Amino acid sequence: MVAPASPNRFLLIKNTTEVWKGRYCGAMIVHEEDIPAIVQSIKEYNFSSRVMFIMFSPPVNHTLYDTFPLNFLRNLCIRHAVTSHFLYFDTDLIPSFNLYDTIMALPRDILDSEDSAIIVPPFFFPKKYMNMCDTIPSCIQRGLQIAPRTLDSLLQCYKKYVCLSTKHRMPTHNFVTSKWIFDRRPKLWRVVCWPNDVQEPYMVLKRHKGMVLFDESFINYGGNKVQYVNHIRALNPHFYVLNNAFAVDLPHPYSNFSVAFKQGQYKWLIPVFERKLNIVYGNRTELPVCKEKPLVMGMK
Image (cartoon, rainbow, N blue to C red; front, side, top):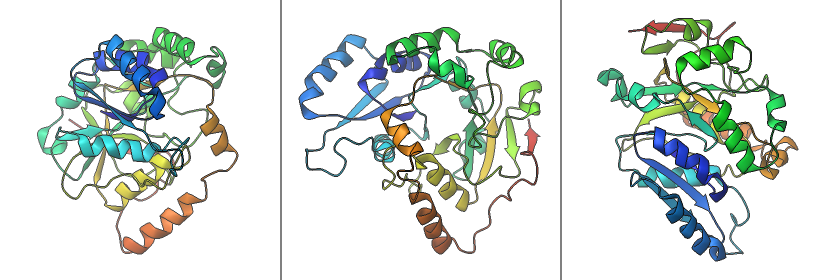
């Protein structure tokens, strides 16, 4: 598992890495003067030996100083990974208790294929839940209290309209269908059409020599995962949705970086990147866009 990290999320990372049985890499951008305190905090949390933190400390005159270079941080972890696969996550995602075991139990011909992209479905709380806490520590504590971690608790939460399959009506996560909710038999669902061009699913991918990395020109929030997903799409892999395991997005107030994105910063990068894809993969074949709702096909 790889994710951009920050010291104020150590409590959440501690919980995640106690549930996630595999290796975990969190990459952080930090000020040099803060490093001793961060190192001390890492020691106090007594993280598992499976956990690795990478700290990037640019000088004051560096382009990335006082930014949140999400894709640069993700790539740091991917480049330093020693595992055969990686799952890219956001730190604010809370995994179900069975996520690691469910992934490891997948058919090896699919899991070990360089042409497989396995989507881990996230669930979200209603927008009003973002105002139920006002600090990161209180949001983490609240989120860990209310987030379902088993399928039974998720389905109960879903039926009460407290756990939602989309984020605040945004069109960025559209892979949970009624089949996913009600049919527990398949280990995977095969994606046979793509919802739209702004999907940003979290995926398990196999590491290999020619694997695609994140575009590091995307800094702070705004299209950083969308560009990566669309690059993967251009390679025309087989997309699957993991059944029977999931993650829940931690409700928390908007950060300054996310506010900046909503004000329009960095949105211009997506069209530029898409033009580059069209130049490099002009004759590509990829999944067609869904005419109606996303369609999936079950697999045992």
